[in-house]
Every structure is written in C-alpha cells, then in structure tokens.
Amino acid sequence: MKKAGRPVIPRKTIYRLSIYLRCLARLRENDIGTVSSEALAKAAGVKPTQLRKDLAYFGTFGTRGLGYDVKELSVKISDELGTTSLQPVILVGVGNLGLALVSYRGFEKEGFEIVAAFDAEPNRKRDKQIKQPILGMDALPGFIREHAVKMAILSVPAAAAQAVANQLIESGVTGILNFSPIVLAVPEDVMVNNVNLAIELENLSYFIHG
Amino acid sequence: MKKAGRPVIPRKTIYRLSIYLRCLARLRENDIGTVSSEALAKAAGVKPTQLRKDLAYFGTFGTRGLGYDVKELSVKISDELGTTSLQPVILVGVGNLGLALVSYRGFEKEGFEIVAAFDAEPNRKRDKQIKQPILGMDALPGFIREHAVKMAILSVPAAAAQAVANQLIESGVTGILNFSPIVLAVPEDVMVNNVNLAIELENLSYFIHG
DNA sequence: AAGCGTTTGTGAAAATATTCACAAATTTAG
DNA sequence: CTAAATTTGTGAATATTTTCACAAACGCTT
Image: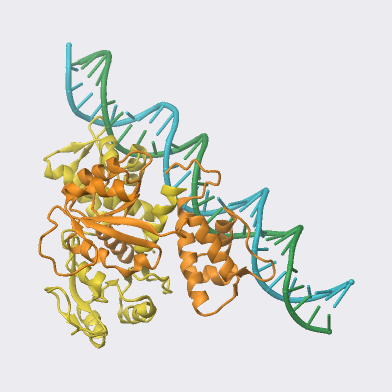
C-alpha cells in the first residue's frame, strides 16, 4: 500500500479504473475513436465528475470540447494499473471452484496467466482436464521462488486457508486473491482481496427484501 | 440502492455484518459464550469502534464490562440480514464458472439453495454431474414466476449478459449476482452485485507493485 | 455494598469520498 | 475569423465513513 513519490490513488478509484478500461475496450471493438466523460461514465455506471476526478489522480488526458481519445486513454490507464506486462499467478486449492478458476478465460484475456496449480491431493481424480500442472504442496515454496511469483489465488477450504496463506507469504507472495470464507491475518506489506460468494448473496438478499 | 425502510444501514455495514456473523459462527463452534468488541473486531479484521458503530445501526446488544453474548448476537445479526429463511436462487449460464458455482457448497451452508440452472445449450455435454436440472432459456420466465424466485446468479458470456438480465428482471428477479465482466443497466429497484475476478486480480497487481 | 477494572454505546472530530459549479480550452458552424 | 456549443479539469462544498474520546453501565472481588 505504499506508493512512494507518486500521488496515492484511492483503492476505490483503482477499482473504477479497471472498469473504465473494460468499457474502453468495448468502444475500441466498435471502432469508436473518442468518448466524452459523460458517455464513458454512463457505460461504467458512475457520474461523469467522478470519472474525471478519478483520471485527475494521475494525469490529464482529455481534449476540452471533444472528450478522450479511446486508444490513448486505454493505454494511460493500463500503464497506471501496471497491466501491460503478463503476470504469473499460481492457484492453490484445486477443488470445485479452483478447477473452474484455473480454466477461466477471463484472466488471460486481461494479462494474467495461471502458471501452475497446487493441491494437497494433486493426483486426485478430477472432472476436468486442465493445461496447467497440478503439483503437491511440497513443491509450492520452490516454485514460487524459482518463478518469482508474486500473486496467488487461494481456493482451499476454510480450515486450511491461514496455514496455506502463511506458506505463500513466507515464500514471497505479496498479493492473495482469497476465496476462502475466512479473514486472513497477514503482514502489512501483503495485500489480500477477498471474494466471498456467500456474502455477496447475503448482501443481495438484504437489499432486495429490506 | 434506495431503501425506504426506517433504519437505513450503509451497504458497507451490511457487508461487515456478514463477516461478523461468520466469525461468531466460528466462536460458537469453539463453545465460546461471550466475546468483546475488541476480540470480535480483530477476528473480522476491523477496528473495535467500527464494529460497535455497525451494531448500533440496529440495536444495542452488549453488556458493558462483559461484551456480547455470542449466540444472541448471531441471532440478532441473522435477523437483521434476513438470512433466517432459505432463499431459492437460480443460476443462468452453465459454463465453466457456472458449473462450479452450482456445485459450490458455500451457498447452501449459508441459507441459499440453487434450485435450477439455465443455459442456452442445456443439453451440451458437461464435465460434471449436478443435482439441479439444467433447463433451456425458454423455461426461464415460467420458472421464475412459478417459484417466486427473487435472486439470480448470472454467469453468461459478456455479449449475452444484458439481454439475459433484462429477461430475469422482466420475470420478477430483483437481485442479480453478476459474474459477467460488464456493467448491467437495470431499473432502480433492482440490485446488482458484481463479482469480477479479473478486476480483483488487476487490483491486487496494482497494490503489490506500486 | 462499595470500589475497581472492563467494555459498551455514542456524540464529536477527523478523514475520505462524492458531487457541484464554473472557468478555461477546444471544436465546429457559419 | 468569430461566436456558439461542447466538454474538460478542478477548487469548493457536501456527504459519507471512520476514528476518537469518554461517560455510563456492568461484573467481580473483597
């Protein structure tokens, strides 16, 4: 969470930048060259002023009276997010969900590649063939160090999550996308993003019923 | 997002209530009868004052000098979230991810049941047997109305997402858990929770590299 | 029952985030 | 070239969320 030198960009803004990037990609597919903050904001589901403020955190890219160049803005946001180079990612916990995530196409399209998967039972019979190797947990530390892996997807059962997270961190992982339904305790310099599907549903449930 | 009810509880608080509920469940499993806001907050990864403020939105449940009764607080939060009764949920889009979600055990444990799945190609060969029926899209409106389904999980390709969402809404769905990587346009009274895995990774990537 | 130590509940303050309002810059039309 | 029409960028104003600070309430011990 340290960002020496440059302005510190709020986490929420970073989230929205990712959304803008996707909207821009669609505009590009439709051969649209320029877009106003109003149009882009609408596509992203935010207010135009918010979009402009978000961009203002790291530069000024628009042309007054005209809008933004779609291609240029894409590149600038991409640069800022650091998504220009392919990131190696590993996945730990090849159960139901893990198996689906490994073969999820959405990742590679966005510059991430799951290079290997790990599981306590690597040889267990699984419903699906995947192109990545499934390795045992003993191979984890070596692999992380050897391939300089910084990011991991954690989809192990709740009971094992903290222990596995500790292993990951000790071996050098600093970013964890956590699908386990527990709150991980991690050092300050390690970033955890939680995705808890049950909570998302519960949340929906609340707001639709009152 | 508008809430006509008397106690307007922020969305973020609702999120955290779900987290507290899970922490309390673990305390219960360990036969712990009471817990202080400090201990519970630590388990949930928040500050004690935030926990107390969150609870204050809908009541006062603690005993000064002692803390909270684990069982009682669980019930109170559960009541507030409305998770006490089993909610029927449908899933649309039985691809890679959809298939995993249908068989994900985390949902039922939390009071949700995926009662049916729908897909444009219901009879396509799939890697996995599931207990729910996979129906064609033509059966969607009828099913929703007949079973009074209010919540849906949307895991169709981006290109189809908006059209399917429209169908869902027209048939009576008011809460959508959206896994498609696009921003859905929906009426005010429909709630959408987005889960975008690529964005989560991108977000991580940003914060670990700086 | 009185005093001590603990922990809640909550107004007030601080920190963040969003929205407004409008000048400045630029395009487009005539 | 000039004027009208857009649309950005941003300081100021709001709104929201988090944190602080501390009185009040309770259990426990003696």
